[in-house]
Length: 252
Image (cartoon, rainbow, N blue to C red):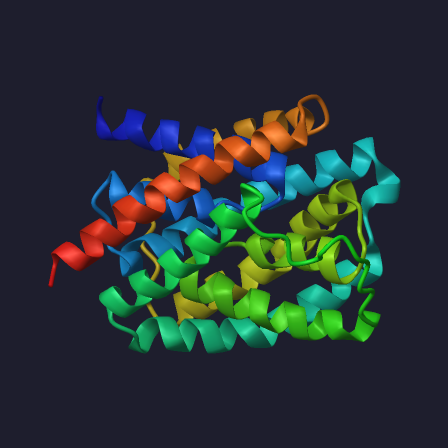
């Protein structure tokens, strides 16, 4: 398989899974790029952020147009507002952390996400917590830090927070997360561009494929069982987490 075909496939898989689950793209792209394509975290993160933009835009629009009531606009703006400050912190940390330390932190986030998707633990304990709305700004700060630091859109932070802390339905959580991460990711890209960390080669393959497949992913999220999709993605994350850790520890 040629490099161009590899990146087309990567963009397709990323757009499909990300738009379906509302997680942006980094949780899919970063493991594949580092485990299978030989990128370091420092190289993969800015590239992942650029590809998230079409995914979040297309996914957010499709979800909003098909289910207008699922977009919680106050939540979108509060998360986005908090994330702008968070991306400055995340980009600074990304610049000053070693690849190894960054990889270990990211693998912890992947493992947490995988176990949550597979239902190994449930932070909500079946209860509705209902935090006040203003606390979404704090969630946004953490989403912004993780976005610029790990190359994710923020969905791995937003979706669990919306469902567990604020009682959103899964559809509302996915739609609102996709819309908020447009601003979060633009801010992250600006910070990385400012720090001269953004590489732009291969983007034509990744963005084109991600743009098309994101539409399909947003549509599929309403056609297939969400539990099945979560389980499959959880297994994928678990596998890539251990592959990722093995590669990091092997370098010692």
